[in-house]
Image 1 (cartoon, rainbow, N blue to C red):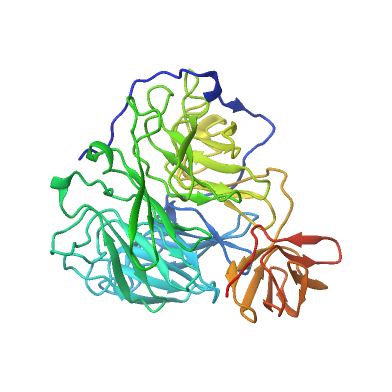
Image 2 (tube, rainbow, N blue to C red):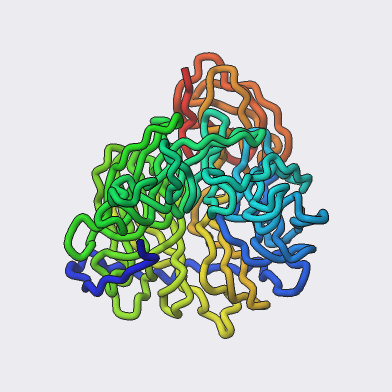
Amino acid sequence: MRLFKLFSVLCAASACLGTLAHAQTVSTLYSFCAESGCPSAPNAALVQAANGDLYGLAASGGAHSLGAVFKLTPGGTLTTLYSFCAQSGCPDGQFPVLGLALATSGDLYGFTEGGGANTNGTFFRVTPSGTLATLNSFCTQVGCPSGEYLNSLLRATNGGFYFTTQFGGIGAKGASGQGAVYKITPEGTYTQLYSFCTDASDGCPNGAIPYAGVTQATNGDLYGTTAEGGNDDVDGTVFKITPSGTLTTLYSFCAQSGCPDGDYPVAGLVQASNGDLYGTTEYGGNGSPGSGTVFKITPGGKLTTLYSFCAQSGCPDGRGSPYTLIQATDGNLYGTSTSGGANNGGTVFKITPGGKLTTLYSFCAQSGCTDGETPSSGLVQHTNGILYGTTESGGANGAGTFFSLSIGASAFVETLPASGKLGASVKILGTSLKGATGVTFNGTAATFTVVSASEITTTVPAGATTGTVEVTTPSITLSSNVAFTIKE
């Protein structure tokens, strides 16, 4: 195994060249502070809750300097909701990792990497107002997801949560693996679905060491990446796993000499509206010196390399992105790179589903990097249409920033969940929803209640079919960002 490798391969085709854009400007909304008591080191994409605010985890800082849950308004006001290790011995956990997952109840769920009853991390629930409940304290035995570098949490359509670990897991014969896939209930009961590479002598063809969580496609299956395994035991894979645990390796990277198809995928996947899945690799590609790629892969496993980073001298287009892409409502994919760009402070970029990349912003464009440096997560699109993200350094205090970037997208609504049976309860999240006069599911009218300016509750009406959910307000009709799927 190896942690990384670089390839000195040059861009051979003009099609790999990206475009620099100067129209969009990042707005720094908040600068994290380095003093004791402040949340610091935000380490994952934010999530929008039903109240319209954005929620995140800080790996350090807080009242006890061991991490915190915080919320940010779209305007940049930060509130620390919970500081971990509030009790002697930290039974509530410490060092929260990655992001939060929003449940249909409106509560948020997440992990800590330390603390808990067994000092090996916790699974917790926190309300939007900050009341925290520890649901599980992970154990110390082989095969537990404790202390094994947990990855981001996915809320699936069956109501359960799924996650991966970078190490650990246990095979059918008791051998310890190199990462695993787990399911965990909202009450905290977890089940191992698959353990990677429990026999390293076989070369780990099904992958090893997943660095990212899984995503659920519209077919109900889960898709993810491993950073290693596959070809030569070191190059990484794309895999599919059913909710019950049957895993299929769809693609092994570095299948070609020089790895023009990419190497070492550490980000997760996102399914676009065209049905394909999109992701990035940290290394490989035709850029110099093998600085990563953007790729698409069909649910059946056909991979196409769309773009190679560092296609230009000095890497003004950035280096490979370690964070999961998002598809915004304009149909384009957006992401961040942690290095490269005009100032080598990282970038925000967009890429079309066909592979044309545009650098939207290069961080550290201001003296002292007051606009932030080294993006620390992927992006989120708020229902107001604006993109939001964080950096891990720079800003007025040198401890990172919370920023926004307008892409000119209109406001929209988001359903929670994105699928359901006729008669099922659904929350609709949005902006300026007060005074709404109508809700439809693919044209079929539904009864509804306006809870607040950012939330409507409704039920899937009889006769509804799969399609767009629309909310009519006195000033505008808002459409859902994805089609609502009617389940049998």
